[in-house]
Length: 180
Image (cartoon, rainbow, N blue to C red):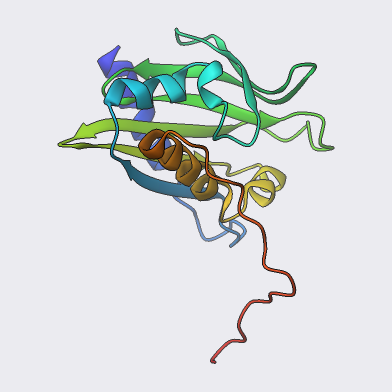
């Protein structure tokens, strides 16, 4: 299992390399958060369907315990994200495929999400690397804040015991002009 996980993590790292002929649009995200909580509590929140309640943008429906099994997120009656667990090793992390369903771009190839979940002294490192080289609609949907928002909600829930409210965009807020 260790060799398989290491190989998948290596291949995921290599998948992020871009050649000069590819679109310049960023097709991956890499988000890190440190959580001051018990490792087992963090692991359970990330590797069980029930664990996604209170922090993720939708509920977990299915989370396999073995590679090859399904992972699904959505509502009680609708799958919105579908994937397959590729690797899982407590103490290191897990890897799964990811594909939005029912949003008008079901024909996009799956993307790959690599989770690193490691004890680092008194804190747990959680890193999510989402590579979607051939899935521009998926990356557009996730944007720059998708994973950071979710992981900050996970951190708040585990450190305080209370879910963080969903951030709202300030009314009338615009990005600052360049050069100001």
